[in-house]
Amino acid sequence: MLRTAALAAVAALVAAGCSGGGGDNSSGSGAAFDVTIDTPAAKGPLDKVKWSLYAEPQTLDYAYAFDFPINTVLANVCENLLRVTPDLKISPGLASKYTNPDPLTWVYTLREGVKFHDGTPMAAKDVVASLTRHADPEVGSSYSTVFKDVASITETGPLEVTIKLTRPNVLLNEQLSASPGIVESADFLAKAGKDYGNPQGGVNCTGPFSLEEWKPGTSITLKKNDAYWDSTLAPKTSELEFVFIQDPSARANALLTGEVDGGYLLPTTSFDKLDASDGKLYFGAITGSYSAAVTNLKGALGDRRVRQALSMAIDRDGMVQAALNGYGAPAKAPVPAAGWATVPAERAQTIHNSLPAITQDPVAAKKLVEEAGAVGKKVVVATSNLAPEISVAANAIQAAGKEIGLDVELRTIAPDAYTALFTDPATREGIDVLVTSGYDMTPDPLEFYAALQTGEFANYGNWSNPEYDQLVKEALGTTDPAARAELTVKLQEIALRELPGIPLWDSPMSLYLGKRVTGVTPNITHLSYPWAATLGSAN
Image (tube, rainbow, N blue to C red):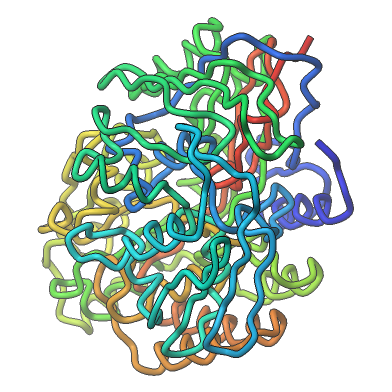
């Protein structure tokens, strides 16, 4: 992989977001680490690689690709109209070009010669079927609100698709570089029906790997697509097996012993051991921060003063040390500097540096709780052993809440059920706070802040603010990235004042590669970019 000035700028943003700048990160707690965009290029092919996932995907249906495990797999199997590259830029994907002839129209010209894994050619009808499916209420897509401004998606040529909008929406085009823009065979969707994406129905896409086998509870195996259209990303690995290891200690041991070759989103408690092993621990850019999402505004946290008080009472420095062993820093906002990649690095850093640090003040926080009449009121925080960070954060929130007079209860959720909290609103019933490691699919920070509009799928607490909604509408119609970023700054100000989610910490994406493999990007783009295509032998 190439290292360019653009890549170095992204790396610098992540470093500055965690430590104040420099080539390595240090939180002041003794942890120091380099942030990079690439790993050494593969020197040759491999017959098979085993990769670890912290949880089994609930499905491989792109309409529900709303979490790390499913996207880590699906990025190598299914492709999008556009593509977010490892340097956090949007480029053509299955669409060779696109135009915006007027504010309400986007036209996509598809590549010739692209075939699905069953050998059938991709055509405009497949794009129409794939995208319109998100708006079908019977499907219940996690991305239905991405298409809320769409009037029509039509086939305007054998290899041309036109999207008409009811109002301007630049973000829609950008989001077609991720799960909302995945293209599946229309015929396969019709044939698979309700089995689409499950172990029986499978998927039939165009990516560098095809789905070979899914053993529920055990593994998902992909095989190399020898007919893949993009010769620059011809896979170097013939077979890729994803194994599901929920227990953090067992996952670390599997990496250390070589039972599995690599993995993303590693247990933070294992960083030191992994770094001292025969393999290599990498850290890369990420477009989101850990936050405490407020999922119930009808209870105690419905009063903004209580949300502010809880935020003021949290010991973020202690949380970073306990949860991350110092591999991170307290967050200033829900989107770190690296998440502003649509503007020059200098401007992104200025935006981030201008934010005040969130200071801990439990005395003032307790007064706010008293003013709100919330003393003794219950707040339920979801916790899980899915990752050490989640339980550490939940415990810290409980301690902070109790110190300022709230009755904070922890509710333990099984790892698989915890991932469902982000896609099924019913599972959040009775929960007030949910610890989440959110991320943007695109390099545009507007994506995160637009998701807090009234009625958005990822607006977990159904927070609503008319001023905020109007600003989002204006930003969606602003094509100039710099001007759009300034409107996003205003959205950020409102979000930090109203706190529909409480920022906790910034930490980089983690990647471990065993001694026999190399060649993949360490950063967040692996959730939509075909990262495993460049995975190969280190020797």
